[in-house]
Image 1 (tube, rainbow, N blue to C red):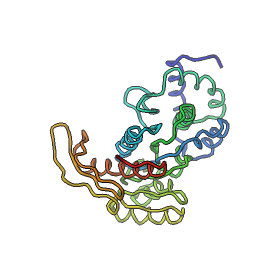
Image 2: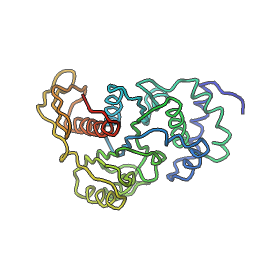
Image 3: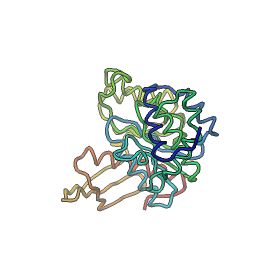
Image 4: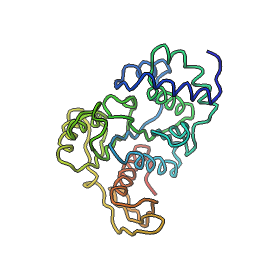
Length: 280
């Protein structure tokens, strides 16, 4: 396969959308093994939900970066450039890396009919290894249990909220969708839950127990108080098990957004503790 420039590489990636959406871990596991399992080179905050995972992931990444941690951020979809999906230290993956990586692996990808999302996920994890990322905030793409990202070794997992979405793939009930999202639960790993609906919470609790994980509810772990709405956003105070923050400002409005920020702060606090650090 000849070398591609960035534009050609992106076109090749978009062309993989013809392989559709295929939930399952077989292809991504095989591809990552062929790459030397880069997903094992960093720890992760693995985030699944219907709404709010982007906010939560951005907060985790920002806190890690602010504390000197070499951080990665993997999100989807992007707004303008595909490079927005993969960031380290706040910077997008370089064009030349995308071009070189796709050129090197496109034969394998086409031969094995690896999907678009599986391919970009593998590229992200391979880049995180190259960039010597210590910890990454990783968004689930679709569902959780069979999502391509569900191969990371998380320090903490997060479920922000559950709603009806992608019912063709995830089921037609809140309980069914919650079951798929809760598939990110891992043995010995804390799962931080921001969902309140009983039909979802019961399913999540069962899944975490079955996996041997450790369930934490946001409302039992932190408090958000002293809300003040400002033209540029919202100012609030945050109290977690190991930290108190006053006068925190975010360019967001609404308690639902602040809950996602609080989830990100608590998840970052848990990740930093695993690295021997504390939120300051």
